[in-house]
Image 1 (cartoon, one colour):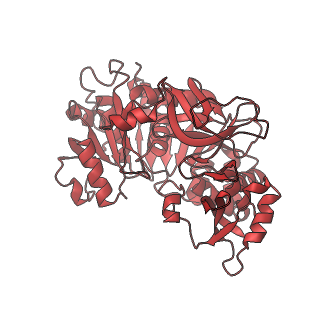
Image 2: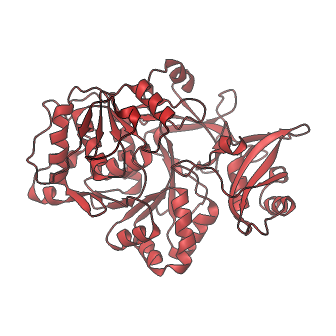
Image 3: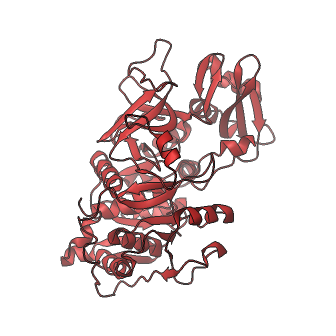
Length: 493
């Protein structure tokens, strides 16, 4: 297959001087990145899997590029992992060494591993990648990454992401988004997962463009970088919510967002209310896409299309997608007679992982006999085939009074109430209905929270009557993970 980073193989003076990475006030050109990465890649050859202490730094990006060019699978480690989770990941993946920035203090669980410090020296001589590495002779099915799931249904599982899936997803997104080497991406996402690392760092490098990482997300940083020439912004809903909140009093942020070519949100659904506030203030539409660790990217809204808040768009080139019922029978594409029918998303294509590390049982259960991956995400399709996620099968599908209800659309309706700052929806047992709808609310004003009757009436004017919440639980905050996703199991616990 082709090299994952063709821009690193171009040695003209113009290409060498192009900016590749910038983290704060530290930067590397393509020549500097090639020199730093290849100097590290040479001793990594044959090392087996390597762990990377994935802080949001230049060293993390160099370490990952070096390992990928050496053909060594990368295990990105979340610096905020608890000791038990980290111990499980290390035991399960058995890395031969850990890559970290010089002087970085590592937790005790990593002390037994050999450590290689990542030197970033833009002026280092070009070492050249090891013979037979970094080019097109690596097996496209070989794992480039072992990324661990969040472990919401048991111990985290190591997802084996092949080089083929990385290349396919990045090229499909480039086709749909018009992503080129002229684009400059800004983001402040963590680098231990697919969104921030594979899409947010490797994506620009595959195109020959550049990355400006904020280190820590701030609306001031977004405004500065977009005003300074960045063309694309990646974020999660928490970040876009902060942007929407800041826009009314921040004309510089508003002007900067108007200059952006592409605003992309992922990792969780962006509430409709935030979509609408950003578009009203800037005239720009936030593009949503849908993916997961096991599949990388599945769908995306097309830039320039008519705004459709709540939609994650259409399948990417090369990705097959279907909705199925509880018996794995495909649902018809057209609307069901009683309205749009909720089904589980299943996908098939070159974007898929090859399996879970050391878990043949889980790998087998994740696929149908004919090769469709069971995502566990529930969705409906619009008449033209666009996909709308309504929640996770395990936590967001509520069966009430004979209806299948997706929590996501109720959450969007609740967030449109002026008395609601944050909202989550779950189901709980009901002797009559089977399950009743429960609204978990962070009120806008804790001194005057909305009542369940107010919220039920509010939802009832927007959605079908059976989707109204019947129970209200007030909270000071809702539990979320590092990517801003709601942790509903923790909420109910």
